[in-house]
Length: 297
Figure 1: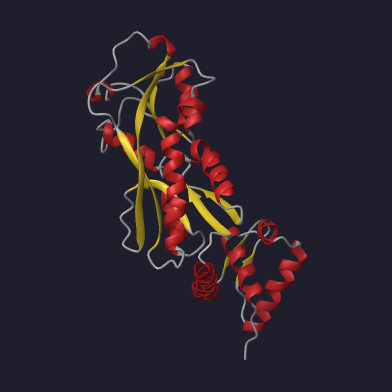
Figure 2: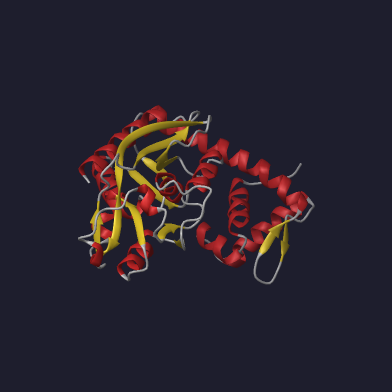
């Protein structure tokens, strides 16, 4: 019989995700030699190597790939047992893993975390910020409990809870303050600064500007809203940002803020979690806190 421990499986999962012994050891809060020894013992128990070891990174072997799929299922089931135990108590306490997209995190997260720790001091909050597609994948794999993002995500396995709507605003150079606000057709002829591929806010902005499937004149991409706003301040072009980002991103940039005359572009912010999550009733309470934070922000 192969003797495996839950600790070894968690170390294996960390190394699979990080592809690097040092980073995986940091996440697991152990030394790199200790992690290496545990992985070697796991491979000896299984009788087959799990990783190909390179000078800078490690990658899964063919057997390791198959093993990883089953390990994820085992760890997800173990985590759900913990969720079930927490749900049976009926109180919000213990670890809660929250994902959030980058166009929400810096602006709303500080208030959300403050409100949550005040309302539920027993919570141990862990935050993960990344793009929507990764959050959905991590929800499916059980690596996070819930995510705050723009709806809809249209995943049958996930519960979607709308929280609040927010408008997009147009950011132009300060020298454009007295110029008429461009409409969507005019934007098609302007240099529009957008987030890089993978950000859902990019797709929402493209949709509003009716630029999907076409290239606007000299479209430029950035990795963050902060970069986009600073480029606008330097006279490079114009951009759209969500209203919650205004106070943070425009305070040190030479820009002017404008609102569109017609129907305002906007997005629906919500929370999602697995339909099978035993924490569903507790997550509804978390959603109420997030909703209040968004409304008061």
